Length: 179
Image 1 (cartoon, rainbow, N blue to C red):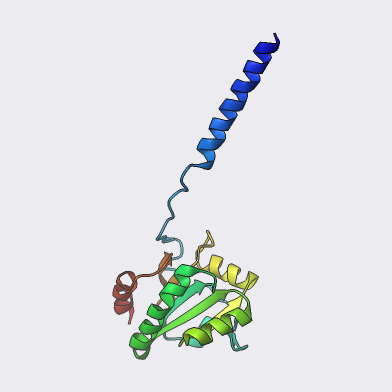
Image 2: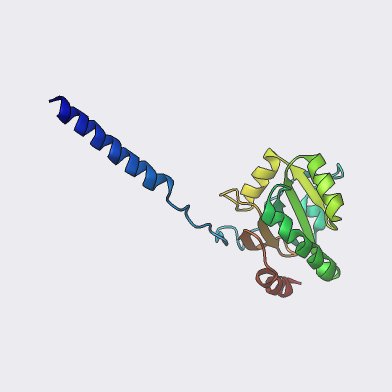
């Protein structure tokens, strides 16, 4: 009888070990690179009031009549950091045509100030924590993905949303349609 109990316990341990091995070594699910929320695209943009890295409060109304590219990011987010030079180039190239890039950082103010100075960011940077997460959610980022970008036309209508690192070929054709 004792041998049967030992065999059963050993078999149960073997099965549990195999289950854990398979479960823990399973590859993670693939990341969704692009998400578009049809319930927000075509809708009027949500309002917000966030503090900038310089201390002033900013609202979307401050950029009335411009096409706005809102980019949610953080200093610790590698894809966010990689896309910033491209965003600065777009601001330089299309700013006179009516584009305004706005960076909204989910971070602490001093880290953002240091990072913005180091990279010499040429567009407004807004900073916050809970208020930034709420704004990101209001703009359709239900998963809380960073970077997350939203393109708003000059009339305040959301025209495009993108979760993940933006590539110029994804964004520039849309910009040209709106400018």
